[in-house]
Amino acid sequence: MAMLWRNKIPISAVIYEFLVVVALCMITFFLWKKYVERKKKPVLYLGFTFTFFSVALLVDTLGRWLGFLLINIDYMDRSFTDICTLLSYIFLAIANCFVIAFMDSVFFHKGTDFILPFSLFNGVVIGLIIPKITEWIADPSFGKLRESTYILYYYGIISILSYGLLAYFGIREGVLNDDRLPKVGFYLIGTFGVCMILMFVTIAGDTILVSNVAAFSQGYSPLYYIGFTLAAISLGLGYLGYIMPDWFKNIVVRTTT
Amino acid sequence: MIHTVYIISRNGLPIIAVGKDEKDDDFVEAALFSGILSAIQTAMQEIDVGVPKFVDTKKFEIFIELEEEFAVALVRESTETEERDLMHDITAEILDKLDKKYDDLSDYNLLSDKQLQDIRALIVNMIQKGEKELSKRKATKIASDSLW
Image (cartoon, rainbow over all chains, first blue to last red; front, side, top):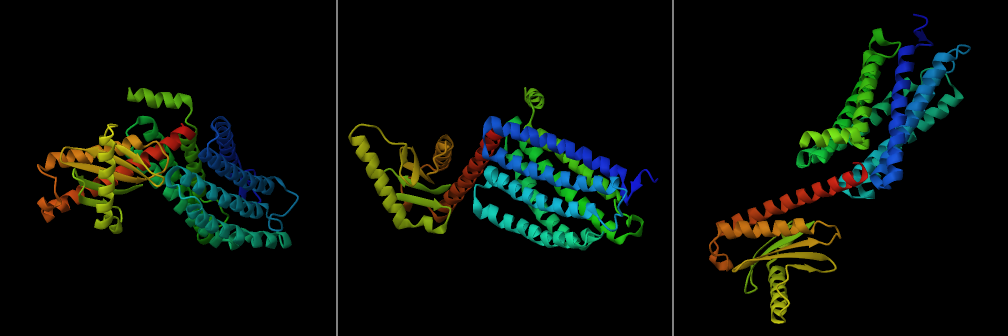
């Protein structure tokens, strides 16, 4: 048991997050490769979205690694997981702005009229987190993240709204299309949005369970793992929908003929 | 975006104008538009260059489909996109549907209120269909060019 948990962090969480980060970084790489090939705005926005996602998850995983590996400090005195998770939400909020820009470039074409309000809502997340980070610098003890759950809920609501739009318009375009390739592509983009929403809901559920149920007071309820599994599924869907490798394209086209 | 659809008799009188907004249905504007369009067509026929099926202004694109008794003109805000074929299809489909449904559509005064309501409903339906198709084609084109 001592091997599996250290400083209140299970090794399963450390490994699981790391694997998701690796997958995320690979998709980010493929997206930038696609941008270099095609030089299109939607890919640019997606590239930034996935880059900030990757940075967010990298920072979060780094916090988990530091908390797990550094044994000569007391996690109660210096909580790296708290500060890294808070920092990761800043990058996640920036990623949200770019996913909105992506949606606008494909579906809405409203420009700043559409992007700006959503960016401002996400800016509030950043504005709320920065004071918490300065608080942590003054006093790095455990608990800053728990004090900030309202920010995480707020972020969750904005993200659900953003990805809800992506899910709705992606699936709608899929339904409207008769050609096989765009139909499948849009369905995948829509389902990616649905999985992201489910991920935010389960992660929020995990926060609620950890705060209110004694059995999970140490953190990392089953919902945490379900959330990251959904993140992994989203990445798979994102890979097929956004990158659409040739082998997958061939399968889609072959099933039509 | 489709601005207004005009049904015009061949002698240049407006039969009905259906816009996305109520103000676009303004009869005076419809009468002026029908007159100008009819004058352009007559003049082009006179100089033997043929009847125009598409007129492009700085602000609008006008798609015209003709039948013996009446014409359908679809006015769309210029966006410099390549969906002109679709607009031609929509205009032709309106003409075809009206031609099949009504024996005589040459004069506004010959139509009952019920018939005018039916024509209006048909055109509104076609405008919505066109807009839907337009947005679908745009999103699909962008996504295909960028991602697939």
